[in-house]
Length: 505
Ligand SMILES: [Zn+2]
Image 1: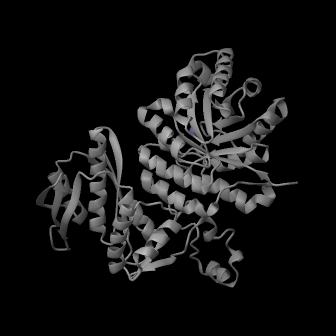
Image 2 (image 1 turned 60 degrees about the horizontal axis):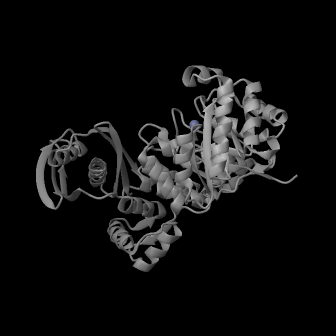
Image 3 (image 1 turned 180 degrees about the horizontal axis):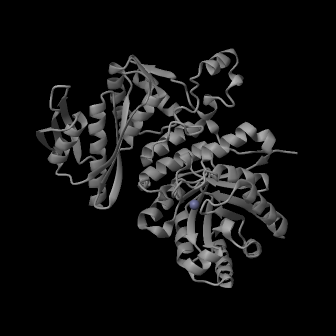
């Protein structure tokens, strides 16, 4: 029997982006979409075009720029939604319209206030209309896992007849159990007469921590597409995590008789990019991409690993693209070597961006003898994923110690004019933030502050991520530097610059 190829439908930019605080602007979405194409996902769900002008523009831009994967736009089973989605994906090499309506009693009665016959009719006409705009149409029966099986099978048969080439069975509320969900897919495969004319897809939420298990159980029962997100981000407890689903197939493909087309060596980089763009930090013990996922601490394990890696290692860190502190460049590396390395890492930078990142690399290399891949990635995301800077850090000096009141002196350039102030605080970071806030006249609230060392050692590049809220909008700011106070100031200014940028629009 030949190995089945399971399609990976990534919805990081749609469902993932719906989680609180993870909103991305359209340039950030494009950067993530490009990386998803490198990861070789089959389908990118780029957004929900009718939801807002920004959402529409994001989908349109990705459809125009990203080649390789199918680009999908989400639409309720309504004429205006479908037309808007069709317009947004029309520039794609391969486009898909993904339309949905709820099929469970509770959703039909309480939310939609529609009869089941009305829902069936709306679904069929939505699929027909979408088929006039593209050949590739996916239909989702929202809350399928809590729907009446007879009705669910009827609606699936009807939308396949109407031209749906993919039919998705979501566990919208994360209620299903693996054995039960697998059995549901099996019943659908056995009862829907025209099921061979479509691909059955699954979309599982993680409210009980079972999203990945449910997805795999569904594949065993015949599902041919899994919907998932990078780092498992998404509404509430999130979606099935792409990296866990993919590595389960990669590691246990023989048992499951299934695999995916994912380039697993891009997994770690994609995880880092999504974490840095959304500000959603990955927990250290997260499977596959967490900082400790491949760290073996116990003596017995280490001893076994030294004798034969297969004693405790079911997959290698390299297979997901984790380079264990791979030294890449040093203090004497030139511009050419730098440029080659940046390109090898998958970044496509303009000459001006290369110059800017190279200057920054030189400064880092002066402070730190060895520069690792992770450092280069931090430099690039710090220098390139920037938005126009209203506030520029010109100077910072912070004094603190066990017997001193922390005092910060900060000079900012604001629209070309330099302003310097001094303030005290409860700690060095607090002193720096108070001073910046006062100079900028900013009103935002700091919601969270996290600092992380990107590589090991006390000379590591520190990366600071902050979330700042102002007037109902939450933004993420990031900064990296070998000095964590400077990294903290940069992250805060990055957030203030984002707020200023959004307010201007
Ligand atoms: Zn969802």
